[in-house]
Image (tube, each protein chain N blue to C red):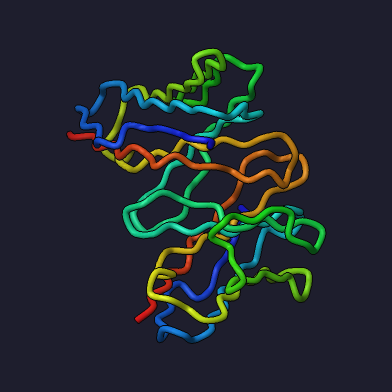
Length: 113
Length: 113
Protein backbone atom coordinates (compact mmCIF):
# COMPACT_ATOMS: atom_id res chain seq x y z
CA UNK A 1 0.00 0.00 0.00
CA UNK A 2 1.03 3.63 -0.43
CA UNK A 3 3.21 4.93 2.36
CA UNK A 4 4.63 8.35 3.19
CA UNK A 5 7.29 8.65 5.87
CA UNK A 6 8.36 11.80 7.61
CA UNK A 7 10.63 12.13 10.63
CA UNK A 8 8.38 11.52 13.59
CA UNK A 9 10.77 13.17 15.99
CA UNK A 10 10.60 16.92 16.40
CA UNK A 11 13.31 18.97 14.76
CA UNK A 12 14.81 21.61 17.04
CA UNK A 13 16.99 24.29 15.49
CA UNK A 14 18.41 27.68 16.35
CA UNK A 15 16.96 30.83 14.83
CA UNK A 16 18.77 31.81 11.64
CA UNK A 17 19.77 28.26 10.72
CA UNK A 18 18.36 26.22 7.85
CA UNK A 19 15.78 23.59 8.69
CA UNK A 20 15.69 20.52 6.44
CA UNK A 21 12.74 18.13 6.56
CA UNK A 22 12.55 14.82 4.73
CA UNK A 23 9.67 13.02 3.05
CA UNK A 24 10.06 9.50 1.65
CA UNK A 25 7.35 7.55 -0.10
CA UNK A 26 6.79 4.03 -1.42
CA UNK A 27 4.33 2.28 -3.75
CA UNK A 28 3.26 5.50 -5.42
CA UNK A 29 4.10 7.57 -8.48
CA UNK A 30 2.70 11.00 -7.66
CA UNK A 31 2.11 13.66 -10.25
CA UNK A 32 2.56 16.29 -7.54
CA UNK A 33 4.27 16.47 -4.19
CA UNK A 34 3.12 19.22 -1.87
CA UNK A 35 4.15 20.66 1.46
CA UNK A 36 1.68 22.09 3.95
CA UNK A 37 2.07 23.83 7.27
CA UNK A 38 -0.23 22.95 10.16
CA UNK A 39 -0.47 24.89 13.39
CA UNK A 40 -2.11 23.28 16.47
CA UNK A 41 -5.89 23.06 16.11
CA UNK A 42 -5.86 24.54 12.60
CA UNK A 43 -6.25 23.22 9.08
CA UNK A 44 -3.28 22.56 6.79
CA UNK A 45 -2.07 25.55 4.80
CA UNK A 46 -0.49 25.06 1.39
CA UNK A 47 3.14 26.14 1.03
CA UNK A 48 4.72 24.70 -2.09
CA UNK A 49 4.05 22.24 -4.86
CA UNK A 50 6.52 20.43 -7.08
CA UNK A 51 5.63 18.38 -10.14
CA UNK A 52 7.07 15.00 -11.05
CA UNK A 53 9.16 16.51 -13.86
CA UNK A 54 10.66 19.23 -11.64
CA UNK A 55 13.77 18.84 -9.51
CA UNK A 56 13.60 21.97 -7.36
CA UNK A 57 11.20 24.77 -6.50
CA UNK A 58 11.75 27.91 -4.45
CA UNK A 59 9.49 30.44 -2.81
CA UNK A 60 11.04 33.15 -0.66
CA UNK A 61 12.84 31.30 2.19
CA UNK A 62 11.42 27.92 1.18
CA UNK A 63 12.98 25.37 -1.13
CA UNK A 64 11.69 21.94 -2.13
CA UNK A 65 13.55 19.22 -4.01
CA UNK A 66 11.97 16.16 -5.57
CA UNK A 67 13.86 13.01 -6.52
CA UNK A 68 11.50 10.53 -8.17
CA UNK A 69 14.25 7.91 -8.40
CA UNK A 70 14.92 7.98 -4.67
CA UNK A 71 11.22 8.66 -4.01
CA UNK A 72 12.19 11.48 -1.71
CA UNK A 73 11.54 15.17 -1.20
CA UNK A 74 13.53 17.57 0.94
CA UNK A 75 11.96 20.74 2.32
CA UNK A 76 14.26 23.55 3.43
CA UNK A 77 13.51 26.71 5.38
CA UNK A 78 16.45 29.09 5.30
CA UNK A 79 17.07 31.83 7.87
CA UNK A 80 14.52 30.17 10.14
CA UNK A 81 12.50 32.22 12.61
CA UNK A 82 10.54 31.26 15.74
CA UNK A 83 7.36 31.99 13.73
CA UNK A 84 8.28 29.06 11.48
CA UNK A 85 7.62 26.68 14.40
CA UNK A 86 4.80 24.37 13.29
CA UNK A 87 4.17 20.88 11.93
CA UNK A 88 5.06 20.45 8.26
CA UNK A 89 3.13 17.90 6.23
CA UNK A 90 4.21 16.21 3.04
CA UNK A 91 1.37 15.25 0.71
CA UNK A 92 1.18 13.35 -2.56
CA UNK A 93 -1.41 13.52 -5.29
CA UNK A 94 -1.93 11.80 -8.62
CA UNK A 95 -3.02 13.58 -11.79
CA UNK A 96 -6.68 14.49 -12.20
CA UNK A 97 -8.46 16.97 -10.01
CA UNK A 98 -10.44 14.49 -8.00
CA UNK A 99 -7.46 12.45 -6.90
CA UNK A 100 -7.08 12.60 -3.19
CA UNK A 101 -4.14 14.06 -1.31
CA UNK A 102 -2.36 11.51 0.86
CA UNK A 103 -0.59 13.03 3.84
CA UNK A 104 2.42 11.98 5.84
CA UNK A 105 2.26 12.19 9.61
CA UNK A 106 4.24 15.44 9.59
CA UNK A 107 7.38 16.67 11.27
CA UNK A 108 7.18 19.16 14.10
CA UNK A 109 9.69 21.99 13.78
CA UNK A 110 10.68 24.14 16.74
CA UNK A 111 12.85 27.18 16.06
CA UNK A 112 14.47 28.56 19.20
CA UNK A 113 15.55 32.20 19.58
CA UNK B 1 -8.47 36.15 -0.12
CA UNK B 2 -11.07 33.42 -0.67
CA UNK B 3 -11.33 30.80 2.04
CA UNK B 4 -13.11 27.61 2.97
CA UNK B 5 -15.37 28.07 5.98
CA UNK B 6 -16.59 25.34 8.29
CA UNK B 7 -19.27 25.33 10.95
CA UNK B 8 -19.52 24.66 13.78
CA UNK B 9 -15.96 25.00 15.05
CA UNK B 10 -16.71 22.58 17.87
CA UNK B 11 -19.51 20.03 18.25
CA UNK B 12 -20.15 17.81 21.24
CA UNK B 13 -22.61 15.00 20.71
CA UNK B 14 -23.87 11.92 22.49
CA UNK B 15 -22.88 8.52 21.13
CA UNK B 16 -25.50 7.26 18.69
CA UNK B 17 -26.66 10.73 17.67
CA UNK B 18 -26.51 12.11 14.14
CA UNK B 19 -24.27 15.05 13.34
CA UNK B 20 -23.97 17.24 10.27
CA UNK B 21 -20.78 19.13 9.64
CA UNK B 22 -21.02 22.02 7.23
CA UNK B 23 -18.58 23.55 4.81
CA UNK B 24 -18.71 26.39 2.32
CA UNK B 25 -15.98 25.74 -0.25
CA UNK B 26 -14.42 28.45 -2.39
CA UNK B 27 -17.10 29.51 -4.86
CA UNK B 28 -15.54 28.62 -8.22
CA UNK B 29 -13.95 25.38 -7.07
CA UNK B 30 -15.10 22.07 -8.47
CA UNK B 31 -13.56 19.37 -6.30
CA UNK B 32 -14.42 18.92 -2.65
CA UNK B 33 -13.00 16.72 0.06
CA UNK B 34 -13.47 15.71 3.66
CA UNK B 35 -10.54 14.68 5.79
CA UNK B 36 -10.28 13.83 9.44
CA UNK B 37 -7.47 14.02 11.98
CA UNK B 38 -7.65 12.11 15.23
CA UNK B 39 -5.71 13.93 17.96
CA UNK B 40 -1.98 13.37 17.51
CA UNK B 41 -2.39 11.42 14.29
CA UNK B 42 -2.11 12.21 10.61
CA UNK B 43 -4.64 13.85 8.32
CA UNK B 44 -6.66 11.02 6.74
CA UNK B 45 -8.70 11.13 3.55
CA UNK B 46 -12.41 10.34 3.88
CA UNK B 47 -14.12 11.21 0.61
CA UNK B 48 -13.84 13.26 -2.58
CA UNK B 49 -16.81 14.78 -4.39
CA UNK B 50 -17.07 16.07 -7.94
CA UNK B 51 -19.96 16.91 -10.23
CA UNK B 52 -22.45 16.18 -7.47
CA UNK B 53 -21.29 12.69 -6.76
CA UNK B 54 -18.69 10.83 -4.74
CA UNK B 55 -15.60 10.18 -6.84
CA UNK B 56 -13.62 8.26 -4.24
CA UNK B 57 -13.97 7.20 -0.63
CA UNK B 58 -11.73 5.55 1.93
CA UNK B 59 -12.35 2.51 4.10
CA UNK B 60 -13.18 4.88 6.97
CA UNK B 61 -16.13 6.27 4.98
CA UNK B 62 -18.59 3.48 5.73
CA UNK B 63 -22.40 3.40 5.61
CA UNK B 64 -22.59 5.70 8.62
CA UNK B 65 -21.15 8.56 6.58
CA UNK B 66 -22.73 10.52 3.76
CA UNK B 67 -22.00 13.73 1.90
CA UNK B 68 -24.09 16.07 -0.15
CA UNK B 69 -24.06 19.48 -1.74
CA UNK B 70 -27.70 20.42 -1.31
CA UNK B 71 -27.76 23.96 -2.65
CA UNK B 72 -24.68 24.43 -4.81
CA UNK B 73 -22.72 26.19 -2.10
CA UNK B 74 -22.79 24.19 1.12
CA UNK B 75 -21.01 20.84 1.29
CA UNK B 76 -22.02 18.67 4.23
CA UNK B 77 -20.74 15.57 5.96
CA UNK B 78 -23.30 13.58 7.92
CA UNK B 79 -22.49 10.89 10.45
CA UNK B 80 -25.66 8.94 11.11
CA UNK B 81 -24.92 7.26 14.43
CA UNK B 82 -21.77 8.60 16.03
CA UNK B 83 -19.30 6.39 17.87
CA UNK B 84 -16.67 7.38 20.41
CA UNK B 85 -13.96 6.71 17.82
CA UNK B 86 -15.47 9.34 15.49
CA UNK B 87 -14.06 12.00 17.82
CA UNK B 88 -11.60 13.96 15.67
CA UNK B 89 -11.02 17.18 13.76
CA UNK B 90 -12.87 17.11 10.46
CA UNK B 91 -11.48 19.25 7.65
CA UNK B 92 -13.18 20.25 4.45
CA UNK B 93 -11.03 21.15 1.43
CA UNK B 94 -11.66 22.39 -2.08
CA UNK B 95 -9.69 22.52 -5.30
CA UNK B 96 -10.18 24.55 -8.47
CA UNK B 97 -10.11 22.99 -11.93
CA UNK B 98 -6.66 24.16 -12.87
CA UNK B 99 -5.25 24.71 -9.39
CA UNK B 100 -3.38 21.92 -7.80
CA UNK B 101 -3.19 23.09 -4.21
CA UNK B 102 -6.01 22.28 -1.83
CA UNK B 103 -7.54 24.94 0.38
CA UNK B 104 -8.55 23.66 3.79
CA UNK B 105 -11.05 25.03 6.25
CA UNK B 106 -10.21 25.55 9.90
CA UNK B 107 -11.95 22.35 10.86
CA UNK B 108 -14.75 21.16 13.12
CA UNK B 109 -13.68 19.48 16.32
CA UNK B 110 -16.16 16.67 16.94
CA UNK B 111 -16.30 15.21 20.43
CA UNK B 112 -18.49 12.14 20.95
CA UNK B 113 -19.30 11.41 24.59
